[in-house]
Length: 443
Image 1 (cartoon, rainbow, N blue to C red):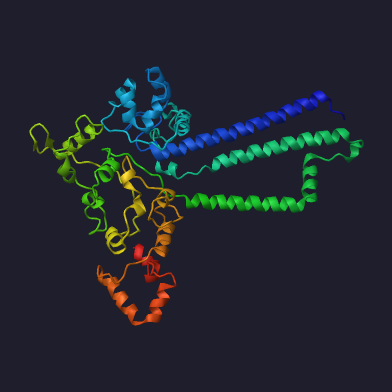
Image 2 (cartoon, rainbow, N blue to C red):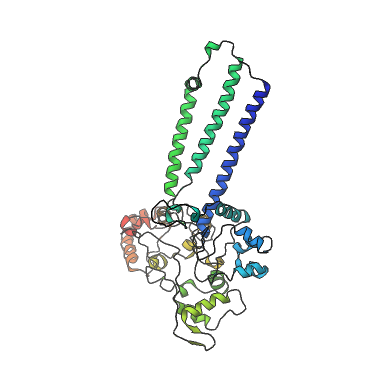
């Protein structure tokens, strides 16, 4: 059996085409997966691909902006800061009038990130075109909470299948070349027999590779499970855009002025509209970027700016919760702020630098802040709290808390026990005083 050069060239082309399809599929799926993750983290609160919600539908939005006469790159500027885009582009200014709810700013998103989001959106099928098989006559037009918990394991499955196909293709070419050089036709083996013989010949290597694959699958499974309900980067939209950098940064307003129960209660509280009106009776922001947001405060409080009096027509503000702990977790702000002496920035980041409403800060960003305890676990996870309790010292004997003052009094009676608690690091940490006991944080 002989194989001509033309046949070899055709088989090589087939192999090269398979490799190309493999690479194209892998990178396409990776880009779409990245866009899906960014959409769910940044956009899904207000937008749907094919249906108007708090914000307009996003399917084909780039083409819509281009057909509407938007300036080149204006849509990217809109995502980063809609007010800047509205000031520079008449089309963006018209879009800003679509809804009374202002869009959040996302200055951290790069052009590539925005393209990845919109590529994923444009790849989504229209649910209205699908046939309902549930018997209820309804189509699913939004992204459910279950979708947020799905992993990208299907991408790895596709990659694995394509990788196996490529290996089989290479093996087929190799086998044909070997058969072409054989002289004795009786010594030829079937493809399966050849694979078994090859696997037995290199059984040690095959065993090690199989072990690595199995361990990798288990590691990937557990990493996926550990990522469930990790909320880093979560930033829901809010009915009123609130620039913390303006209030806490430029104006120097203390966090506790607005969140006035943080030293007295379990909850830090969301400031009432009356707190806002303490300043904004006089500050209307006329001619400034946030003038429309202040008008929403007036509408909520029932404030008639022209008459400089309340008209009694209030409209409660419905804020979206950002930091949301499970129901079985107990957390007391006053205990951490007053007794523990924890600064707000340890958990919430440097609010004086944030030009938008709050978000769950990634632990990497929290670690960049001077004075913060450096942690490694994901924000708002149990490991994050436990790690902090193992590093944060407790100020005892200060006269601020009777419970810890009594502990200090008893420790001073036994110098050896006191030295044992100090543990040569010069401090008594939270976990050394029972801060790792389950009942401290769980009902």
